[in-house]
Each structure stands twice: as structure tokens, then as C-alpha cells.
Length: 298
Image (cartoon, rainbow, N blue to C red; front, side):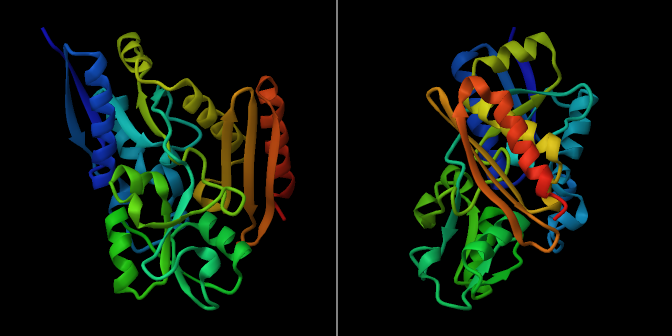
């Protein structure tokens, strides 16, 4: 008898594509299992004309899905980890993180080869406080235009709103088969990604059967990088309410942690990289958190 699982997700093209990636991975290792997709509309999918930080931040894209997970309406939920708050609902956990895609941001433009080639006053679209603050740190002479919507919607707005380009997560472009649209993949020393960017996570209840199922597709390095970022995020707070970038990169036995923090006016007050041995992970997390907290009120 086949074991049946219900997988919850948002209904956007990218969310459904990511869910398909997860199910394909599970089906390769669990031939006797059946997976059904259930789409759930979240608050973040119904409000498109207001910046995220004004309507609740990260939890907007997971709250309704977590409610279904808690009451047993679904067995697992597929998320972009950048949308998941640092603190999960009681009784839920991240059961697996797939191998992370390139976490960096991408500049998409049909007119320009990169951010450095923009003329003074060029119009660049983004709905992210983090991206806006770091863009203006790099190029104070550009005009940042508010922009929200799904990946395909934002791409269409380049021409519709006469933009010189937009900033998107490169991982989303790649998963949608649109990586050729990226004029530039922005280096982390210019634009630090948000916590969890590029990673697909599966949230679930900590039941033995589900956890054993998910461990077969978990990538330990990706999970560790995201866990480091989320540990810093949890200590600092912020989310979509402040311009905050946190990215951990593990290479062998070394780790680099990129940090960027802006104040309430959108001015960058921290833009740093910490490096150290991986066995000093907790010290690096503490140092990174303290650095951000020291400047969080400035």
C-alpha cells in the first residue's frame, strides 16, 4: 500500500516549481510514496500594492500554510527559506533544506550590462528595503522605484513602467529557466542577500516518519549555512522591517559571514564580512549578532 503525503505551497509559478523540485527529489528515493500538492493562498499573495514591511514582513508568505500544517491539513510545506521567520510556530520544524542555489541577487535589464553601467538618474525597481538600501550605498545617483509582484510580473514591469532594470533573487530566475535574463549577478560584497535566500526548505511537524522521509533529500552544508543565518536573524530581529542582509558561505573548513544593516532611514550602517574556522561557528554567530545589535539603533 502506497504511503500518501500532502504537500502545501503557495500558488505562484515559482512556488509550484520549487514544490515540483522537492517532490521529484523525494520520488527518486521513495518509490512507494504518493505526493499530492495543495495550494494555499497567503496574506502576502493578496496584497500587492503595499511594501512588505508595512503589512507584516516575512510571515505574510507562510502564516496560512503553517496553520494548515499545525492542524494536520497538510503533511509538509515547501518554502523559500528567505520567506520563513526566524522563529517558527510552536510544534513545527524545518525537516530539510535542499542543496542551495546561487544565493546572490541579480540585475535584470535589456538596456544595461550591470549596475556599474547605469547612467545618473536611471530607474531601478525593487520592493525590498534591503536591496534599496544597498543599491543606494553603491549608487546614490540612481532612482529606486517601488516594485512588487511575482517573478514574471516584475519582469513585465520593466517595459511597462519604463524601468532601466530590476533586482531579483538569481535563484528564482534560474529555477524558472530565466537565468539568461540576468545582466549581472551582483557580488555579495556589493549586495548581501537576505537570510535564507536561494534555499528551499521543507517545514513539517517533528514526526519520525516524516523526518526520516525528508532526511534523504537534506543537504547538510546548505542546512548549516541557513541555520547560521537564521541564528543571527533570531538574535537581531528585523526581517522585512529593516534593511538587513545576512549570508553565510561555507568553503571546506572555513566560513565567511556577510552582513549588511541599514537604519530606519535606509542608510547603511554596517557592511562587513567576518571570516573564521568552521569549528568556531558559535563565536562567529555571536560576533556577527553583536556587531549588528551594536548598530541597530543608529
